[in-house]
Amino acid sequence: MAALQPVVEAMNPGLSRLIADYQRAVRLAVTLLEQAGIARPSSNGEWAFLGIPQRGELPGNVRYFKHGYGCAVHLPAGTVDFDFGANGEIDGFDLWRLAGFANERLPDYGFADEAALKECFNREVEAGSLRYSGYILYYLTHREPNCTQR
Figure (tube, rainbow, N blue to C red):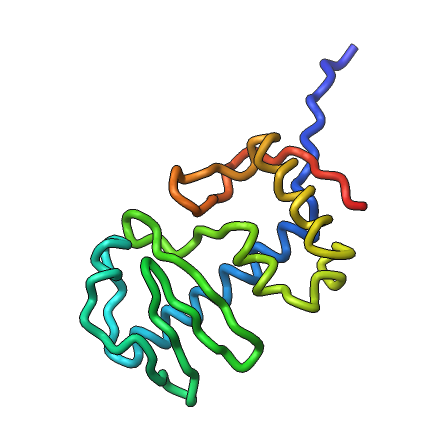
């Protein structure tokens, strides 16, 4: 008799896609910042004290707004608002930023509204597929628990 293999259920596919799309937009925003001569910081503190204008324009007439540990970049496909991580990471996110990024496209990701996204997000945190950084941001973990889609 063969040994039973544990069943590993993947993260909610809509949330997984939303996070991937958000992270892709952040990478594009950071690339545009670098193309404009704004170096990627080695920490969020370095970013906070970086002496650049609070508002400006990046290549392709893309506007940005520098704030605290992050930046809002108005890409042609929509605005992405992100914070740099403690060590300059750009793959962190939180519920507020994901909801703002998806905006009226939440149903495209399988969520009726922000409350449904919040419920799923919190389930994934509880299940261990999202790791809290200790300050605002969450990161994907290698574990892939399930979050049922409603």
